[in-house]
Structures are given as C-alpha cells and as structure tokens.
Amino acid sequence: MKKLLNKILQAFGLVLLSVNRSLSRELKAERDAVAMNLAEYATASDNLRHIIKTLSARIQYSEASEKTLKHELEEAKQQVAVRQADLETYFNEAKALDQNLRQMESQYRAQVRQTDCFRKELQREREDFIKAKKGLTADKPQGIVFGKLGSNNWRKNLRTLSTSARQAEIERKLNEYGLLKTL
Image (cartoon, rainbow, N blue to C red; front, side, top):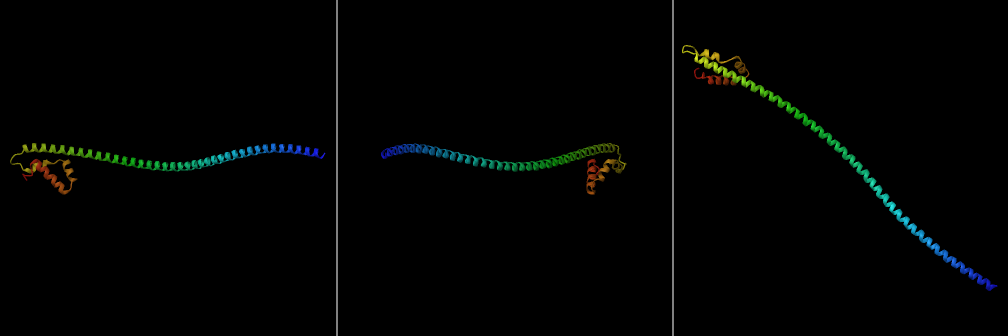
C-alpha cells in the first residue's frame, strides 16, 4: 500500500506539476500581456502628456498672441487718432491758407481796379492837359494849366502817400505832361 500510495502521490505530483507548469505558463502569458498593456498604457500616457503639454503651450502662445494683438491694435488705434488729428490740423491750416489766399486775391483785384482807375484818371488828365495846352496863348499864365492838372481822385491818392513819395509822384506827373521844364 505504501507503494500504491507513493505511486498515487507521484501521479498526483505529476498532475500538480503539469498543472503548475500550465498555470505558470498562463500566468506568465498573463504577466506578459499585462506588461504589454502597461507598456502601451505608459506610451499612451506619455503621448497624452506630450499632447497636453503641446496644447497648453499652444494655449499660452495663443493667449500671448492675443495680448500682443490687443496691444498692437491699441497702438494702431492711437496712431490712427494721431494721424487723424494731424489731418485735421493740416486741413485747418489748408483752409486758413486758402482763406488768406482768397483775401490776398481780393486785395490784389482791388489794387488792380484802383490802378486801372488811377491810369484812366491820368489818361483823362493827360487828355485834358493836351486840350488845355492847345488852348493856351502866350499871355495866359502857366498856373492855370497847373490848376487843371489834378482831379479830386488824384489828390486823394496823393494824401495816402508819404511826403517824399507825394513829391516824387507830383514831379512824375508834371514831367509826364512836360510842365516840370516850364516851372
């Protein structure tokens, strides 16, 4: 019976050994599968961490870009405001210059009209002088001719000149009529 018991025990030991080897192989396969899964999970986890870091870096870059763009937008708005103020200043200066130019043009036209009137008056006086000179006789004094020389406008124009300019204008007019030599 001892032998039988030994054989049973040996057979049972062999069964246990075979079961143990089988379990050991299955356990090893399970361990390898778990290790592979852990490696895959670690890789996936590393990939997720990398993606999260990349996304957070992009978010930070986007926020920085947004701040930069806001700052640049504010600077652009300020520059536009400054340029608009400059344009308004230039426009006002141009408007003032245009107004001054128009005023100077009207003054010039007034001077041209006054000069034309003065020229016409001188022409009339010259014609009157020529007519008066033709009507002179030897016994008529020269002062009468000089009295007919000026009209009221010519005398008014003389009042606006300085004393030396007045004298020069009178001498010019007398010379023009040929009276300066006779006096």
